[in-house]
Length: 71
Figure 1 (cartoon, one colour):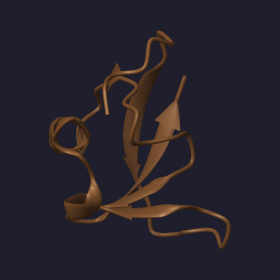
Figure 2: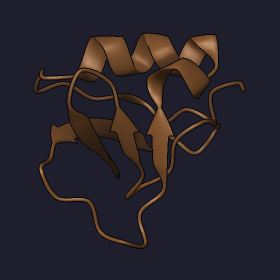
Figure 3: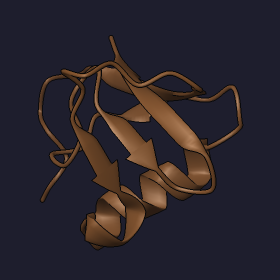
Figure 4: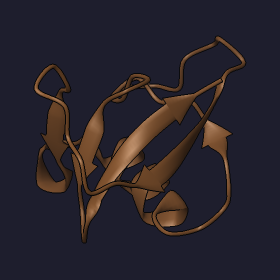
């Protein structure tokens, strides 16, 4: 999916808790562009343009579990 034209940024935050209403996405299920964003953001205090594959509050299972925060 292409980058959204919203101007919003995403950040990944490592999390140990996953709420029952969270959408959990596995890294290998993501499209290539979203995988690149996850790889660049996981474990780093960085932001990237919002991708079409992730929404605020989603959780990505990569090396650890990471919660997506969008602003």
